[in-house]
Amino acid sequence: MIRWVIFDWGDTIMRDRPEFRGPMAAWPQVEAMPGADAMLAALRGRYRLALATNAAESGAELVRAALARVGLDGAFEVIVSARELGASKPDPAFFATVLAACGCAAGEAVMVGDSLARDVLPARAAGMRGVWYCSGADPLAGADAADAIVRDLRELPGVLDDLAARW
Image 1 (cartoon, one colour):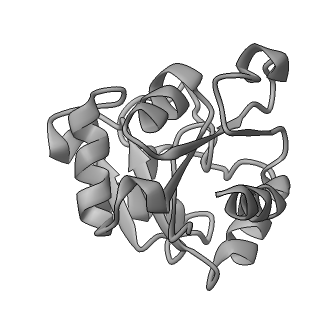
Image 2: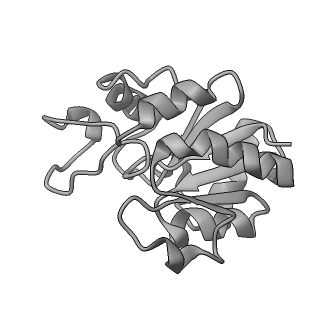
Image 3: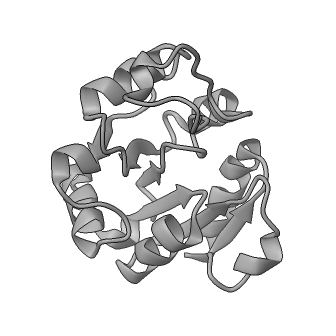
């Protein structure tokens, strides 16, 4: 049974802008990824939602402040950042801490992220399911690496239904 959906932050929920430095909350311009707001609204109430980020300059409070700028600050019950944790993805300790923060077993969680190497593969190694959000990449490259692939975040609710049915 899927209880938790855990998201990567940069280029999964919020657009990463390499031209800006420092915490995203202080950037002159921030934006959610296309379809993120509709997808999160569709998932609220069905699953508990968490965010797990490699952000080195933003702890949970600054991540929430950046999310507030696009109206998504209330979407996530748990936020775990590499800055506060002292470990980052793909370190197994990072995923173990995320699962502990959510209070769930690995088999009750799905990780959604834009990186096969940092999000999907290590989550699967930790016993979670992994959904690859490949908005710009060739989905065939990850066909065997991910439990599911989405090219548009609005596809995720249906994909999670399919995963839950196969689980």
